[in-house]
Image (cartoon, rainbow over all chains, first blue to last red; front, side):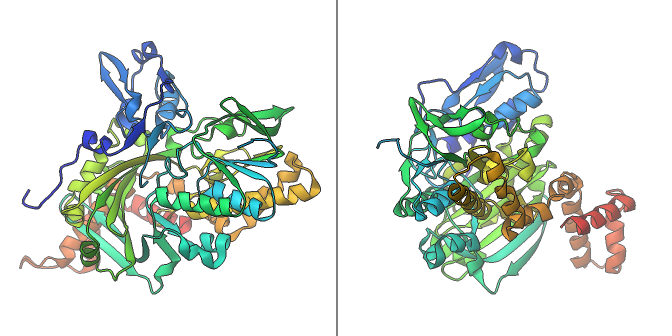
Length: 98
Length: 426
């Protein structure tokens, strides 16, 4: 590319966001159910790729942007495996601009 | 701070919550505004623009003290393929009708206005449940604190757990929500003004349809802030999930598009944001009130995407005001029953700004037509190419060229049907 263009990746993006880790787990997935899940919609809807698949469902809540979309797609398209609530007060993602 | 003695608790210090709290506090109501983030705005994301009228209505002339980035002078839309694009731009004679802003500043400022009017703000506080007495809401529960109140206004956003706890909603369907993502890209003031052809303080808003969404139901947007660009994508949650396209990859697709690439050149990305957008409108709740509680803002589906304007903050403010006014009237009657709060629903339908939601209620269904994203944008670009290209091979008249372009892409019946439905919908 001849133009001065910044290459972005999701990792670079997530590094720009502040997270204040909640010691309490606010997302809990019953990953046994995910083995039967045909569509695995959480892998695609999450804009922060909290969910990944390697033989089984793995999830890392530290990059969670709290959109809540995973819960909806999991329960309506997926295996109803995700339980989700917001992190406790003051914890979780904090946008500087938004 | 003692959490006793509050008449009304407002949950969520976004635009709806702060507008409601401010309206109540101004009338001498003891109001508690509860925010789960470290500060109001820290959890909130939007595209980038606020329509001024709502703020004017809430604050009078003081609306101009808001943290405004740029007043929107230019409105544009681009239909795009990977290597061609067709853009329309409108330059408004009065840019003060809307402005770009960033939520971490705007929401914080608006909550401060509520505090100045006498509302008490607590942050870092997640409301977990409602205090219920025989089905009537009598307060909120936040962590260890049980806070009794006469009434509650729930402005707790798209995922509204309070409406669900009160039995006013069930879980939304994937086709009723979209995922919104954006990069904030830093660019010097002069570069923005030069690149977008803007006077100082003036801004541009732009929508992208076509290649950027990879055939999915969605599109891109760009707003100019003072010294940054808000560049984002919105995609239907069902479409991305079922077609197995990771939502964030659409951001890269948008940025790589030839048209967009030039607009963000030399920029430095300074933040990535994401948020879920409810698209079902007011019907996402069975009703926006119950005994002791009113729902406003995103939580009540009070926002509008009619395909060419995207409204959330203005509607949130107006619905927050309407919620507060309903509570004020109920307070006079000393009656916060569902029957008494029913007046809210009438206000929503009579309030001209909110009535727009009902006027455009058929839009979401129309926008579910994927031809809008994977056929028509390309068709427009190809037609323009054929109309403007002179290569000595002989030209057809424009009408004939347009007809030729539709061949094999879309049937005449579908085209006519889409056009007619469009005319009725918008």
